[in-house]
Structure formats: structure tokens, C-alpha cells
Amino acid sequence: MAQKATIYKVELTVSDMDRHYYETHKLTVAKHPSETDERLMVRLLAFALNADEQLELTKGLSTDDEPDIWQKSLSDELELWVALGLPSEKVVRQSCGKADKVIVYCYGGRTAEMWWEKIKNSTTRFDNLQVVNFSEQDTGDLANLASRSMKLQVNIQDGDVMVSIDDSIVYLTPVQWK
Image 1 (cartoon, rainbow, N blue to C red):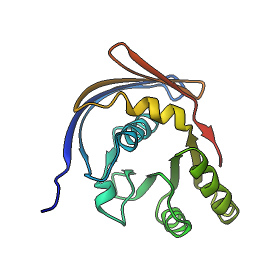
Image 2: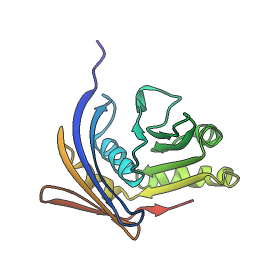
Image 3: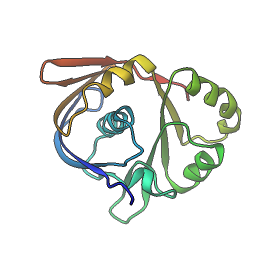
Image 4: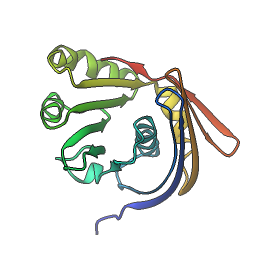
């Protein structure tokens, strides 16, 4: 019998001083059975970093032809495609063809570095692609904050990120690879 997704209720308050965006989002997040707490929290962090009224979490791991997060215009054009992890060169290429802007948030330490070394030369032609890396330590600390019901506060200033739940705080510095 197939396992079912675990539902997480998240109140995500974003204070992005870099973009002057201040909003609270009430999210219901389905955690795929194969998804780790680390990936779930990176997904929420990616949402916070790109927060907008039109931004949506998608089916993620359960579909191959959708990103983890996307933003569509009112006329249903794909403005932003957000992928997590280490997508193949083919997926990156296809994503860049479908959306105005593509952001890949990668994590995983040395594995992510090896992935980027392998793929970076083939991505130079994509002006609409950004690749951002999170350190293994940062995402590991973030994973420890995960719970089924969260009130997550994300503060962004000068490119640095502070994520807090109750008295627990994790500081992250996203590294722009492309």
C-alpha cells in the first residue's frame, strides 16, 4: 500500500528588507513520503526568499513536469520556476525554456559542489537562470526546526537570512553560484 503525504500547517511570516516585502502566508504543505525534513524546510525557505501573492507551492516530488514552487502571471504565463536539490542538465534546460526566471536552490555539501562543477559550463547560455547554494550545516540546522505545526518567522536583510521558530534561530547565508 502506498504511503500518504504528511500534512504540515505553516504560518510563514516574511520580513524581506531587501525587497520591502512584509507578509504572512498560511500554508498547508504536503510532505511527500520520500521527502526529508531538510528538503521540506528548504522548500519553505525558498518560498520565503521569493514570497509574493502569486507564488504557489506545487505538487513537487509527485510530478516530474512541475517545479517545487512557481509563480504565474494573471494571464497564466510562467514567471518564476523554483527547483530544489540537484536537477539534471536536461531539467534545467527545459525549465529555462518554460519560465521567465528559473532559480535552483541546491544543498547537500560536497554532492552539490560536484553537481555544479558538472553542470555549470552548460548553463552559461541561460540568462534567466540563478543557482543558489545553502551549506550542509545551515540546512541541517533548519531541518531540526521542522514540526507538523509551525509558526515560522523569516527575516531577510543584505542577502542574509534568519529563520526562527519560538526560541530557536538559524542563520543562513545563501551563496550565489550563478
